Image (tube, rainbow, N blue to C red; front, side, top):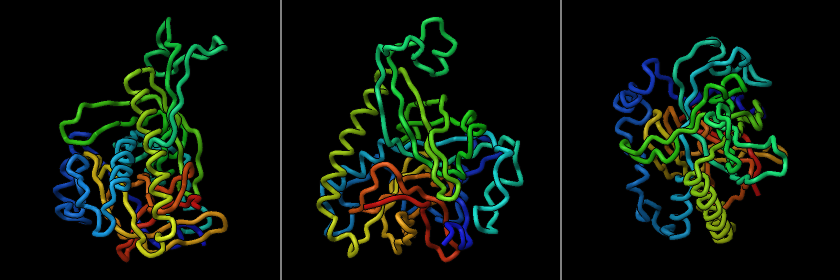
Length: 312
């Protein structure tokens, strides 16, 4: 079954007024008026988990996943966007408005971090924007990868106009932006996209490495605890940036796992809004180390759905 055989809507947030207007969309939100099912990440506690599932490792896993969640902002629409989703007659988002530059926001998540230092090849240096224009680029840098949806960032043209905001946990969080990214992987049919990013900020690089390592260790514990009970509880959580604003946690259940050979996608009740596109969709008890399921859209029935990914 093609991914977008069923009619649905993408959930990127568009803002003609740019960053300054994003908070207006929360007030006027029609999908989830009042945002009562969203939990601000800095207020998320163990008690927000369902009764019987208030487990410390699961809570820690969600908090660490939140730390790795980023806001994705794009200010270009590529002329290469197709008219339809592959193998369907469903219109592809933003096909008819290419070459325009309104702000669009989605969500993403850091999935891998690697440190480089004193590389043998002399031409290997940090390639962040600051170092590219420096006579002495840093010989110590971190490359990290961020998963999101292809309909959020489509290709290199859009990647060149993409910025990531990290640790945007509250409205008054310090603004931490990474603005040098490139395309690492893209699959239009799966709605899966991976960005390659760079920083030579030691504090940021080491922080991301530590969080990711801790997350992988805790995720393994959760996977081992919940593996056999996953068909019963169907617990699902998403951390995203609704309307391009500060990070929110939503807890719900997945309703269907749609098998597609070695791959699958999920539908779920977990709350999402415009701005949630590209967020990691975490079905507790399943293991998807590299090919994350990302939030893809909302079906008219009220359910939400993921892109395609691999799980075990």
